Image 1 (cartoon, rainbow, N blue to C red):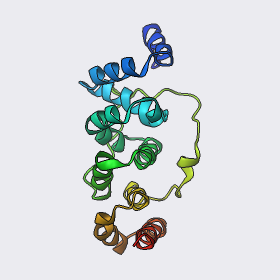
Image 2: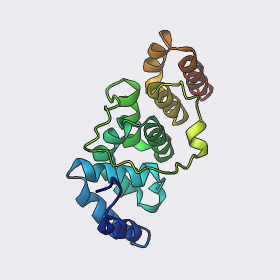
Image 3: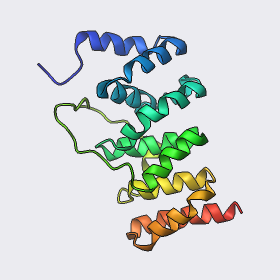
Amino acid sequence: TGRGPSGAQMKDLVLLGVASPEVLVRAMKASIGNSQGVNGVARWLFGDFRIDVVAPEAVGELLPAIGPSALGHPSALNRRRTVSVLKAIGGPSAISLLRAKLAGVIEPRERNPEEDTTLGGWVIFRAEDIEVDDDCSDRAFAALALARLRDKASIRAIKSLAIAASDADRKVLDEALRVLKQGE
């Protein structure tokens, strides 16, 4: 068999586009009991930027289950999109996840071919995908997201990360510190 979705899965994917937000939320909550479900919900909310389709309260309930997995995804592009969406969401849950990424608590996972559900084909790039240089680390990007969320509690961690930062990270971390100091 191929690595793509089965006929039944394709039917489910098509139905996502016409389901009501209430039905989607129930389906997402029911799906997060296993890694495939977590990956699917994370891909739909973060990778497809569907966060605006779901009520903020429901997103807040889903974040603790899907956020760490999405921030630790083997794909750098998926991790960056997750940081971008968390920045857009804001709020305590998103800030907590971004702080964990900044602290290095959430590290990228190794790609597991047995669990790889990444479909081949086209990749759609968005403006958020080029917000920082490709050489910028996830931790530095999380620092910038936290700065833009005006999270002053992260200043110490950002300064600490900047001490031994690469040139690409230093540029982003300096920008994060500038944004935070500007807000004082």
